[in-house]
Length: 235
Image (cartoon, rainbow, N blue to C red; front, side):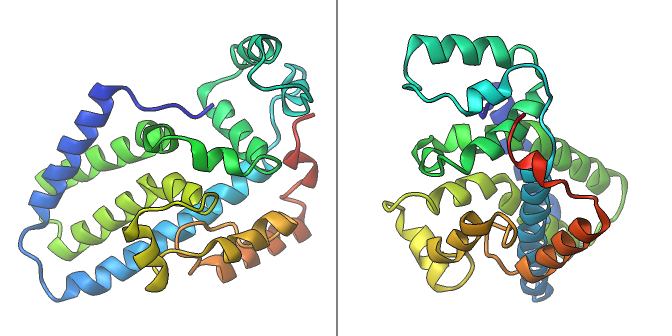
């Protein structure tokens, strides 16, 4: 299940990100192009990740199907007991995979989670390692400032991807989210609803700019048999 990153991990990521910003140097005109490309790449990565997680088969035989289809109150002691027993049998990564599938029949639950919970897994598994790698490259090599800046935009877009996703499933959002939607830097709930209506298109959840390409990847994967629709639901 999604969970907030431990405070030391979050602090380490913040320090690493600050070092990368310092390494980028003074802004130049080509940073703008790098930022737009970085924002597109971040959106594309959210789409490919979302596609993979939606259709990746869950670990069979551990009770994830029972957890997924549980019909009673999810605040009950029985549900909590089943969840605790089942989740102990799978890896942290597989818990994230299950969360993606569990999101489809219960989309608004994501919007109710805190920012820390929404981005915690991303920081631990992706953002922190990526940021430290960029730190090492900047120390070892003369990396151009525009490339560092673009990489930072990808990192920020990727880190906040589940937060942005959550804003698509709630009505009350901060002004910056509403402003970014007007500028088409973030997609609208209406656009994202197309994904939930079919589960076969529009997997990107940041700006949606990359959805035409991600949709083409989905169609190719489906036609070649790389994508198995049985993976949408734990079995």
